[in-house]
Every structure is written in structure tokens, then in C-alpha cells.
Amino acid sequence: MGIRLRALIFCALLFTDILSQYWNGVSSLFLGCVAALAWITALPAADKVSRNISLILGSVGLVLFVYNRVPLEVVMSSFGENIGVLMVMTLVPLMGTVIELGEYNDALRAISKRVKSPTALFVFSLVLVYLIGSVLLTTAIALVWMVLVPAVLQVGKKPAEFLSDCLPRGYDASLLWTPVSPSMAATLSATRTPWPSVFAPGLVLSLGVLISAVVTELGTPQLKRRPEADRVVADPSTPVAGVTGATEGCVCGGTASGAATSNRVADPTAASDMVVSTMANPERRVAELAIGLLSFIVAAASLNLSGLTVYQSMVPCVLIGVLIWAAYLRKLPQACRAIIPFFAKRVPGLSNQFVLMIIAGFLGRAVQIACKNTRFSFLSGLPNLGPIGFSLVVSLLVWGSAMVGIHPIIGTSIVYSIVSPYAGRFSGLPMTLALLLGSCLGFSISPISATILITSSCAGGNTVDVGLKKHWKFVLLSWVVCSACVPFVVPC
Image (cartoon, rainbow, N blue to C red):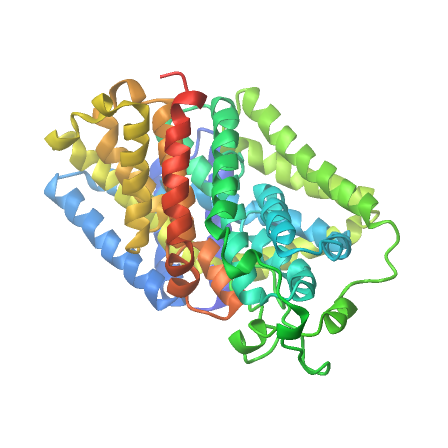
């Protein structure tokens, strides 16, 4: 199916959802029908794994609907359950246009070159992608990868291994509190918990994830200084592993050999040529970037506090934020010209996300209806486990399902539908934090999550090696540490 037709249908769906956020005249049935059409359109363009998973889970949902004799109107409406997530996933990366126009990546690259030890660089990388990812979402992984390659080479490490260890963990930690993430939007939509009540405890838990990310690597070769004599010095004429794209489906290897160049430790002096040496005062540029990102978060939080939902807050924040930031840079015409190609090229390239997110809402609704007529007696004792035990069980169900190939957002919908009738006193904020923790960790090991798909593309490896094999120890440690912190951040 043509890319133009797919772009038209996808954009029509997003526009319909944006309209439905502010006008009650858009029926859920109409939105669901448009979403179903988008799902059918996306299937041929999705990769084989995403397409098969979507078809299997869609079949399961359909069987549940038929078994429970659900009216056709409800079945069709369920296709639109998760469209708000897709809206956020599509619009928020628009902020990346001003990051590129402002040349902030060059300033970050210049700052990163000042970090001389592997441990300090590991922490710097975690914090950098954590902060940028809280606004730019998965786009931040490719952006920060491109920025940090010279610094990683400078400390004698292999970018594909070093950055694959830290960037997914840092980005996923931000998902515990940032109001712009699709997982946050989906979780709050299910639990009906206001975002302001999640921010503080989510922020604390995210720090636990960051600490766990560092502790997991203590004593490993990644954090040890490499003797100068042991470093592999590449031919200066060899291309240094870099980044050729910063969106979904990017290839960050820099050459056709992919993994080979990514794993090579080149001469740091050759890598230093990637840094813009003529940049004056990079600290000022970095401060501008920090203020801009912080302003975006504050604006989104303020709108949420005023009574708008997470979805309603994102639209004005993104569109107005891009225009104001571009005007400050005196590049408003360039930003406006970049918006049209963004939708024409990026949106139709999100077929994997569309087939997974649409079917996540479809299946979640089917499971929710089925659970109304089904009792899971073994879950009746959940409240008796206390806050720590409750968090351990619920989050395990989410990231455990992600480990076997169920997308974390789909897993969140399923687990909430099953567990919510038995949550008791933990049905509010504790449930929300447990689901967020599960999805946060699930994104680090799921072979089909955007986090791992982008990281594996940058590293030139497969999603199992880059995901589950690299991060299973980190997931176990974060799971225990963060669950143990729940009683201290949530009044139960």
C-alpha cells in the first residue's frame, strides 16, 4: 500500500483523536472505525514480528469478544482505546526539530569530551539520556548515541557495548515520572490516577533505577579504565561509528558493516574530529537546552494541574513549544518547513507502533470485559502481601510478559484488567506505580519495544542480545530495589 495513502490515513486518525480530546461530538465508534482502518493499512508495512504479534493478540481479543457476546459497536470502538498513546508518540518527537536547528548536539558533544573516566562517562550518559528522553522519548537514544560516540572512544571503550548498556536504562528510568511518555498516558488512562500525584514518587523510583543501572556494572570491564597499550587503534581513514538517523528505524552504524564498525575502538584523536571545535561557549547552549526541556515539562504539568488530561496537555505544549523555541532561535521559517516532511515521512514509518498500540487497546478492552465474568481466586490475597509484595507481583507480571514478547503497554493493559478487581487498598497510586515500574523494566528487555529496537539498530545487533541478555541483571536489581522503596514514597 502506498506510503502517501498510509500517511493520509494515519494523519486522519491522529487528527480525529486530537479533535476528540477537546470536542465530545466525536463518537468512540467513529474513532474506533478510523483506528481499525489505520490498523489494516499498517499491517502490510509493519515488520514480520510486529505484524504476527498484532495478529495473534488481535485474534485472542476477537475470541474473547465473541465468547462474551459483546455487541459489534463495542468491538469496533475498542480499536480506538489506545489512540491517545499514538498521538503522544507521534507529536512529541516534533521537539527534536528545534534540537537539530539549535545545534545543541554539538554543544553536548563538546561537553562530553571533557569526561575522562569510564565510570564518570557511564553516569553522564545515563543522566543525559534520562533528561533528554523525558521530553524527546525514544528519539533521545539515537541523538545521545550520536553525541557520545567520540567520548566513548576517548575512554577506550566500544560504543556498541558501552552505550547499549547505559542508554536504554537511563531513558527507561524517565518513564516512571515524565508526563509525556505513552506508557504514562496509557497507565493513567487505565487507573484514573492524576499525574501530579505520580510525579514525586515516580521521580524517587526513577532514581532507584538509575542507581541500579550503575551498581549492576560495578566491577565489570565497562567501568574499568583500559590501559593505553591494550587499546585497539584503528586506521584514521576508517569511518568512526556514528549516527545516520535519529528516529525510528535509524541505522547508527555509520557504514554498511553496522556491528563491525560499532564495536571497533578507534583512535580518540580521529574521533575528536567529529566535535565542532569552533563552537564558542557550549555551556550556554547546554543551559538553553536544559531550560527549554524543563519549560516543556513545567508547561505540561501546569496544564495537567488545571484539569486537562495528559493527552489534552500534550498538543498545545508540543505545537506552541516548537514555535516559541524556533522563534527564539530565529529559525521559525525553517521549523515550519520541517513540520510537513515530519508528518509526510515519519508518520507512515510508524507502522510497527500503530499495529501494536491499536491492538493493545483492542485486547485490553476484551480482557477487561472477560474479567468481569471471571474470578481469579489466586489473586484475592494480593492486598495481604503489603505494598512491597503487591509491587513485586504486579510489576513482575508486566515485565515478565514483556520478556516473552508482549509489548509492555499491551502487558500493562492486560495486567491491570486482571488485577484491578483484587487490588483493594492498593488500587490507586500503588497500582499505578507498580504498572509503571513493570513497563519501565519491560521496555529494557522486550525484543519489540521501541527502546530496544532503536538501540539494536544503533549497535548493529539483534534485539535479544541488546535487550534481554544485556539487561536482565539490571531488571532484577531495579525490580527489588524500587519495590522495596514503595512504602517510603506512597502512604498505604
